[in-house]
Structure formats: structure tokens, C-alpha cells
Image (cartoon, rainbow, N blue to C red; front, side, top):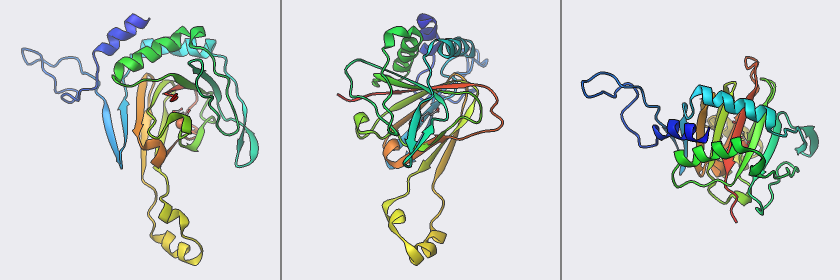
Length: 253
Ligand SMILES: O=C(O)CCC(=O)C(=O)O
Ligand SMILES: [Fe+2]
């Protein structure tokens, strides 16, 4: 499967070329559209790259099946605002040996070895090929059983990823909205009392961006995105089937 994926990915890489549909063959006939990365500059040194057709649908479904069946999914109890709660999605963690341990919301996931999961090695390889110069050594996996599963607003800003983490997110199965919102600035967060009430009226709603993450897509967050922005996959009543998402990260040594 790895070589098939490589072939598919070899055609699409991130030199912004002409728009889809603009390409012409030698005699001027339209050639097959080339899916190109869509870059969103969030400002302040944060950016998002979205490649909706990173993988072809069929390969992505094969991977979905393997991930669904083979990954040792768990639904751990975590701590949110001082309270225990069952995480509203299944999860798993795979990482190189010897890395600093990951801990979030009072939960320290067991770091499984890549060796048990050839499908993850294939996907990691494809991500590395699609993003020359990037390097990932761990992956957080999430499985959303239906639209009632979600991930709430957060940033993946744990110190083990350093000040400017790059996070590459690959999606399989049911499409879901992925939202980004700007963290409140210090000046807006520190105003209080009456003045705050007055000022609050003038403070505009945080900047937001929304991406529809489809089956076989890749979304990359870079630069200061984790420092300055939060992201979420909210509940969606219309999402009736399973979604699996992999976020590849680099733990610094
Ligand atoms: O499921 C997604 O698209 C995002 C998951 C996520 O943000 C995370 O695992 O930190
Ligand atoms: Fe995240």
C-alpha cells in the first residue's frame, strides 16, 4: 500500500501552480485537475495549509478500515476544569521510544510503538513526502463515533512540542467542521468590572476560520497557531457516521 500511496501523492505537491481547471495539455485540452494546497495566513506568523484531496478515496477507506479495527482505542477519564469526565471520543497514542511523555488534561496516554501498526507507518511516510522538511515522531489518534463525539476548544501548546509546533492532521470517514478561533489578547482578557462590561460591547467577536475536513484530507497548522489560536471539532447532529483523525506531531528532544 505504501508504494501505491507514494504514487498517488507524488503528483500533488505543494508548489502553488495554476488553479484547478486552468491546466491545459499540449493541444489545449483540459488535463486532470491537480489538487493543490490551500494556504490560509492567520496573521502574526500563524498559518494553515489544507489539502482536501491528500489521498484518493479508495486508499483512504482501506486505511479507515484498518485503523478502526486494529488500533487499541480507549475512552479515558480526563480532568476538565477540576472535574473528572469521560473524554468525548476514543483515543490512542503512538510515538517513538524514549520521547518525553505526553500529558494533557491530567491524563498520560500510553505511548504505543509504531511497529504494531504498519498502516500508521504508511500514513506517516505519505505525510513526510507531502511536507518536505517537516518531521513528526508521534501521533495522537481520535475516533469520533458520531456527531455527539467532539473535541472542545484547545491548543496543542504543550511544552514538549516547543514554541512553534507543526501539526499535520489527516482525516478519514465522516466529514466534520474544524474551527479555529483567535485566543483573547491579554488586554481584552484583563479588563474587568464595569469598564469591562462597557468595553466588552466594543470588543469584536474573536476571529474565526472554519474548514470542512473531508475523507482523505490533510490540514497542517504551523508557526504560532498553537500559541495564538484554539481549535475545536464541535458536535454536529448531522454527522451520523464515524470519523477517524490522526494528528502527527514532533516531540522535541
Ligand atoms: O479531530 C481533529 O480534527 C482534531 C483533533 C485535535 O485537535 C487533537 O487531537 O488535538
Ligand atoms: Fe488539537
